Image (tube, rainbow, N blue to C red; front, top):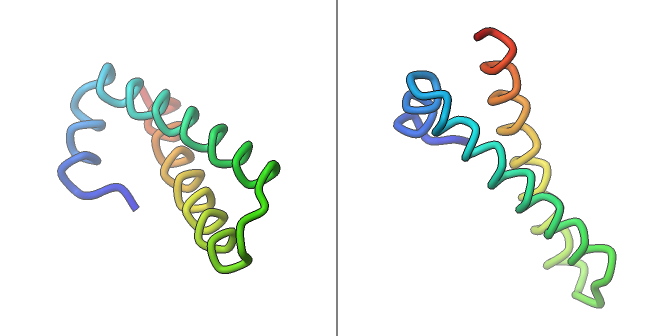
Length: 69
């Protein structure tokens, strides 16, 4: 989950929020590509999938902030 300081900064500054959104979108895309092309063990894949899910939740929070502006 997004730490409280980052969340507060995203609330106050739209440009920081937009940058965080862009970074999360890129990280999710890259992680999903790694997962789809991967021969990793199941423990590592589960970890990556969990991180992708957490990132998607963070992204939803940031999208919600954007919609309220």
